[in-house]
Amino acid sequence: MSGDLASRHSYDETPHTSRSEMVESAEGGAVQIVEKQVQRRIFKIIVIGDSNVGKTCLTYRFCLGKFPDKTEATIGVDFREKAVHVDGEHLKLQLWDTAGQERFRKSMVQHYYRNVHAVVFVYDMTKMSSFENMPQWIEECDRHNLNKSIPRILVGNKCDAVDRVAVNTNLAQKFADSHNMPLFETSAKDDEKANHVDAIFMTVAHKLKNSKPMMPPHLADFVPGEVPRNVEYISLRGSPHHRGLQTAARGQCGEKSDCGC
Image 1 (cartoon, rainbow, N blue to C red):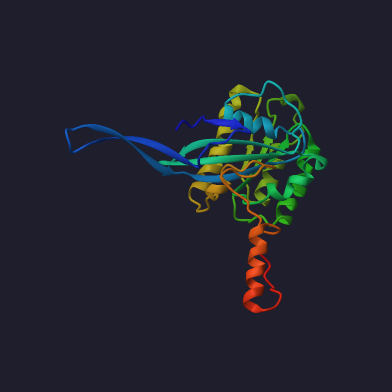
Image 2: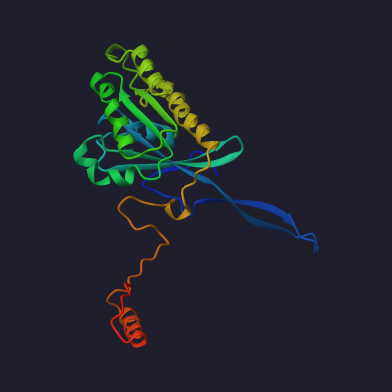
């Protein structure tokens, strides 16, 4: 499956990759095409930082290979995914980019920090306040009990605006070192820096490749705010089946049942 398969708010129908192989039959030498299901590990990566630091542009550049034609503030959660090939294994990276403004992200924050496998912290190299707020974002991760052993990467975006850079590389490197994170400085906008963006997420992919967690298949196609596909919810309370169970229980026990069905 191509590594450039990616989408915004678009999901694979299955969490597996189908691989066709030619198999020669023993009868008459006929050739048959056999579909083999190859399980692909799925990893959730969250991208966090202040509003307007370029989180959405970074994920867009990595997944679609270009800078978005229109840029606007993310409301809620922006989701993209990309299939990558790392050391002979197919992985699926799910990139979750949340709104930097509290009023847009408050209702989604619990879902956002659930089942996270890696974190990418992003600041704007031309805006010192976005860098100074990094400790708050790290604290938010800790507050939601993110495992400190999962891969964490610090990214300074907009390095193409050389004449407006406010965050010194040495300062950023000291902060990254103090939190045991590698530092990347890049630009989602500059085509010449596109390979830097790829390097960021592929570094995460290589770190995850050696880890064990895989998102459960029934969550692989989860869309925030929607009921997962292929999941059926059944409520017995108030239904004829529920009343029948209660009646049967009373008949057997001779008294009101404590059944909580």
